[in-house]
Length: 531
Image 1 (cartoon, one colour):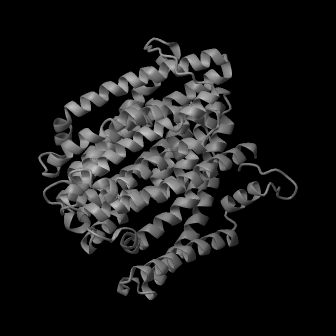
Image 2 (cartoon, rainbow, N blue to C red):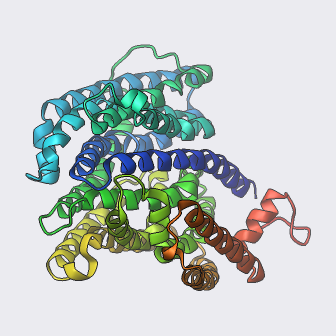
Image 3 (cartoon, rainbow, N blue to C red):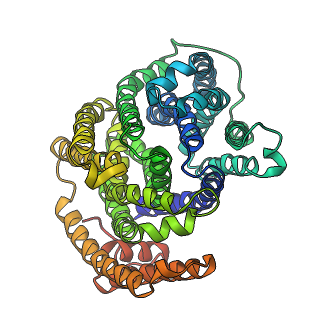
């Protein structure tokens, strides 16, 4: 009961902050789409932004934070405060050195790196300059990720989750003419805004870090025992993240293939951002909240509690993402049309992006649950297993991309990379959950499948209602934006209310547990017990 309440409380805080961030992220993407549309300049910006983010995942959020939290949690349990903060300070300056070296190399060799991602695509020429502007963002966001990991270990989630708000605000500011006119073109101004936002993401966390005990005493060490533990855990994770980024590189190369329509890369980016709006709203929030908890449970050898935490989180996230998947698939064109069809983003851009969203939406439940299962392995300090599975998943993605481009291009067109990603993601999830089950024993799979069956039933009915609503409101014939927005809002609100009502009628355990924990009530006078 206490653990469920902690997960829900932490996830709710993260969710509220993340929703604000995602709304601002939408405003940012809408402003970029309005200025750049799905033109070659848009492809160039996406390329330039994607490359430092690849390295960010490698050295920061993807590998370092996930490897750091279990080690830091152990230090909190076993070491003195002086030893704890000595470790944190040494790691901070060591990470700063590594990130600075990568940043300089990335700027110097920008033409080579861009060519690796986009071949000789014409968008790559402009992307080289934009990439050099954005690349220092990597340095600051790496330090911000470490700060976030430290604060999460102290069960501080709100401020770290809010850091993307400042990235979005800075980028939005630099899209307006009052600032944009100081730069050569809109793409350059937006790139500078990203860099400013990265600086703010780190600086905003510094005061709270200091209050917790961080003093930033200078000291670089590659031999500190805890730093070596983090590095040891990072090495296989680096390979795993590297595999994921190779997947991203593969998708990028296929999206910029000569057969693809112009603007395919920008369309895939925007479709992914819409999906991330849902994914980040709750799935990532739950994953962020459970990693420190599972790390503490693993450190205490409470594997029974760890499995219950994981099973509860999987059911909770499925309850959100399965209906969201169907909603995105059925209402894909109204969603893109309302969110982005303004300025340089024309009707053809909407069709291009909606097609990509259809296939990306399929991946939503799988991607969300992978983000829960992988931290379960990390919490036990096992970073090798996810790497092996990710390597096989990468091969699946490559083969599928080739098949969709060479044999099914007329059918899937620019949605091929998204569909390949979706199928590979489900392979990743099922393989990991099977291995975890074989290694640590039963985790209530039967109860999970029972919950899934109810969720699919409620989602199916909701999906049918969405389709009928979209057909009979005749969304596509309305040309005025306010009318489109009103119809669209009515469809979304109606679908949400219907789904929650169905979940209550069919007694989905997730909605009962959330309600019971939130109101601190007990069913039949007893505490809730995990099935």
